Image 1 (tube, rainbow, N blue to C red):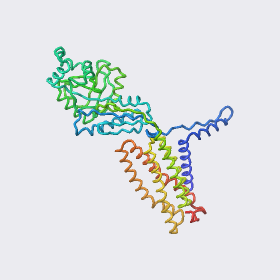
Image 2 (cartoon, rainbow, N blue to C red):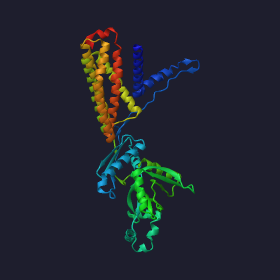
Image 3 (cartoon, one colour):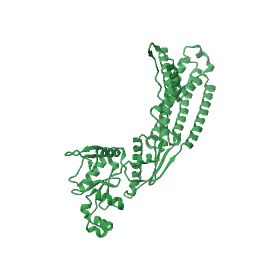
Length: 472
């Protein structure tokens, strides 16, 4: 029975290796498939054909394949000094969610004081990248200025014409107010409040009860609901305007305090426009307005050179590990080297399946994980030798070696996984890529050492080779 389980385990390892290798380099498998299909093997008119293996490309980061580099400047004039750091952090998180929503993985979004640097891998059309970020709306609610403030602004903007323009009427006219804001850059009617897109929980398409007029339904999180309730209570029988990208969309009158954290945006929307607005708000409404101040396209030439050097270094390092393992550990070292090749194939296959965006930092994490995989084998083989030196038979020594090495392997890998989880949770861009590839590598290295290497060495239990002490 133990031998039967061993053979089943070896078959599983063989199938996993073939599958991973085919996923890593499907070109060679598909060439063999074409050769087989051309033979037209079958019975009568029925021919047996094999399907092609899917060719999934590796997903490369900005430093390896190029992309777009954008620099935005945030308008923090309405944000108190003590809250600006939190506002910029919220802005960074929203932009990351936004570009991920459009299928751009592992974006690099960094905050530098009042500036936001955005790097999008694979997006070489700068206009396309700008469109992605630009479609993210800035949602805010504004309350009425006092009559004195409003009249003063109207007087400064329109002078003698102020007598012909009633502020009370003008401030209820969305079209007129929009023209004034766009032409003068000043809002004569409303002032900002603390309620903006930062507190938005979700947005969805809705329709008015009496007519099929589309509108956008908003729901705020708990903190936003509290702020909204306070605002509506404070502004009873007054206008509370809803602005998108500093332009008024709707200017409703507050009839009563609204404590449920729900609101609606009405306007002259078509169904498609309302759907798009709801979708964009769900992707992330900006907590502060932003303005593009720099844009450029980055080529992958520098990254390609770095990648070539990194791969060469990795290959030479791998060969050095193989030589060391074979010389120092002899037969177990040979099987550890084979297990290491299987480990590499499995890693690359998982990178394609998840998929993982590979940057230079991610490749560094992968190479480091190879060292962790070798370390597990070194611990196991050292314990195996100690057990054999005590005169124990090979089968018992092998089980004891793995059993005694496991606590050290577990503790070492667990502590590293905890660190990678922290790096992935709190880091951004390259740091996340490094943490992700390293954590995947560590998990597979445990499987490689405990399952693959162990089953390879179990093959020799009960054979003449186990009695040749010098090869162990």
